[in-house]
Image (cartoon, rainbow, N blue to C red):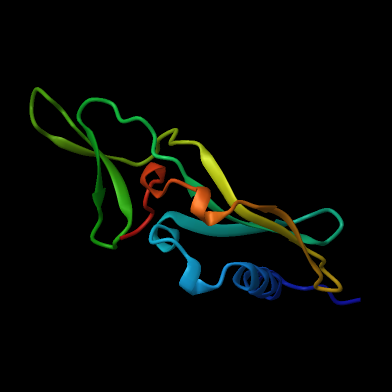
Length: 131
């Protein structure tokens, strides 16, 4: 029996999210601070989620900057030389699951596993992923 591929499961996931959270109700931070992803489970269902990253505490000389491509990059300036370095990998902050659902790989039935009310999330505490 054919099963849904990632794009098909994602479409069902987003449709369910939009039914619960129509675009006009999205807070200003939603587009800039969330990303989505998912993986196939052992039972061939898909587990998908919208997530956001909490801003990590920055060390002295560290700052977030917008790259030429519009994404946020972490920089560290050496206090002695003033030389700026771009941090490729960092432990980062805690990940917040905003919305998570399971999409049955055969029937396409969507089961919501977690739905954080968007108006309860402090957008100022989230790390923008793009401007």
